[in-house]
Image (cartoon, rainbow, N blue to C red):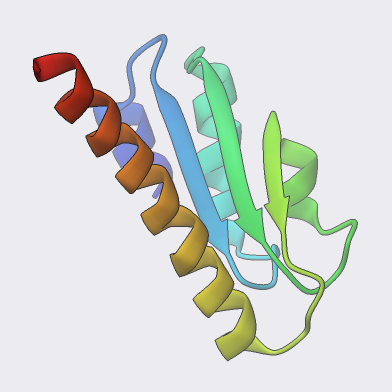
Length: 96
């Protein structure tokens, strides 16, 4: 993950980081790389502990108050699909 951020991440990009527990070392290292590469923002999606390590990396954090992987992942999926729908809707409305 860190290598992907280093290779593909450009200044001004946004990194969206997802980890149910908020403790994934690979995801946290990707966030650290994003900060070093001057990416514009880091948006995190996590669950479990309210003060998990991933939340500490984010500029904007979405956290699910649950320790159940399936519940956390389903809520993350709902939120992410909602963001996509908002983006698509913006482009559809601006095209008309």
